[in-house]
Image (cartoon, rainbow, N blue to C red; front, side):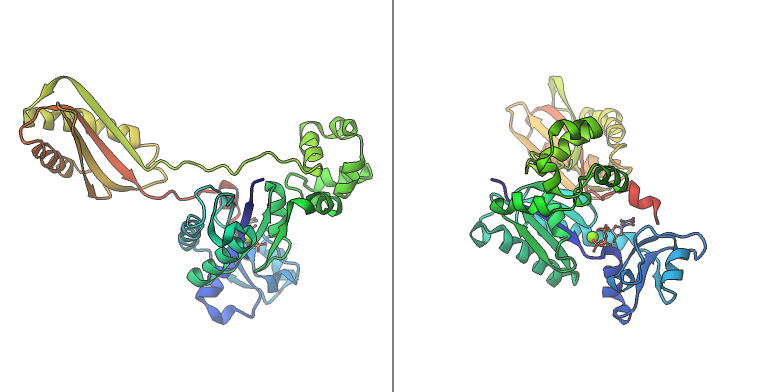
Amino acid sequence: MQKLIHIDMDAFFVSVEIRDRPELANLPVAVGGNSKRRGVLSTCNYIAREFGVRSAMPTSVALIKCPNLVLVPSRMDVYKEVSTHIREIFSRYTNIIEPLSLDEAYLDVTDCKLFKGSATLIAQDIRETIYRETGLTASAGISSLKFLAKVASDYNKPNGQFVITPSEVCSFIAELPLNKISGVGKVTFEKLKSLGLEYGRDIQAVDQAIINNNFGKFGLVLYQRCQGIDNRNVETTRVRKSVGVERTFPEDIDDLDTLRSILTDKLIPELKKRSEKYLHERKISKLGVKVKFNDFHQTTKDFAYSNFDEGIFLDLLTEAVNRGDGKKVRLLGVHIGLNNIEVKNQQFELSW
Ligand code: TTP
Ligand code: MG
């Protein structure tokens, strides 16, 4: 049985702003909504939520609900930095991490040996570590099923956590309002209710054909969820760390000038072309050259740098070739390192 944790930062953007401007702590505060007439809020703190203010609400509406609302411009670069930091914290507990947005991720801690493998204590420790290192609070949900971990992280929000143990799954779902299940939006929920289906127990008791006939593919998913079936794993996105191009020669080469011109005329242009698509979102962290000698011994020489620079590549080549003490070169490669990925969330970008 897998042990999953869903972590979600509390009122993320606005909590970062209040952390950095503590004088705002007891006021209703929202991020975004730059124009009073046309803007839309990104999020707001829990004080503002008591007035009915919400994410994605037009600023004009929010100001009617809460005339004293303090509007703060967003600072994406800072939120991204915090996001990178919390992901680094997650990686101290597991390698199986699936980020969903800047402030939210699933973690599979099945194999984590800390706290005698108690997912509840691991989640507690992650949240404490996040608070200690970033000054921000997070909430967590713990369960053996992905969809329930997500439901659970909302349960004791903010700054809380909730665990649904395997033996509690069935009874928990029975009491669960169906609109808490990811994928059940307003329209689907209304339709379900019109069929007398409002809680998990209603679907647990109904004939599967009724759900299939009315809700198609999603009906099957919903039916399975309510039976406690969610076979999805935590999907780690493998992040590419480098891009490289290399060439094995038809005949070994010992002339440095020939190697230099292969590097500048062929390999670097090809590397540039191949890296283009990554460099829209990522930056270069280092340049490197790899040399394999005719005895199959190979060596790599890297240099931390953030741009393509032919001179640096050539210097690296000379150093690498010199390591061969006159041996002929069988293969030559160039590569760049890519820095950590920055998450882009189109949906959120629209609502700035
Ligand atoms: P959420 O986790 O949905 O919201 P939140 O962290 O502000 O509040 P909580 O989790 O405590 O309920 O979203 C994370 C961040 O994403 C949020 O701080 C701002 C941004 N965001 C938008 O910009 N627009 C939106 O419509 C939503 C929902 C979020
Ligand atoms: Mg959040």
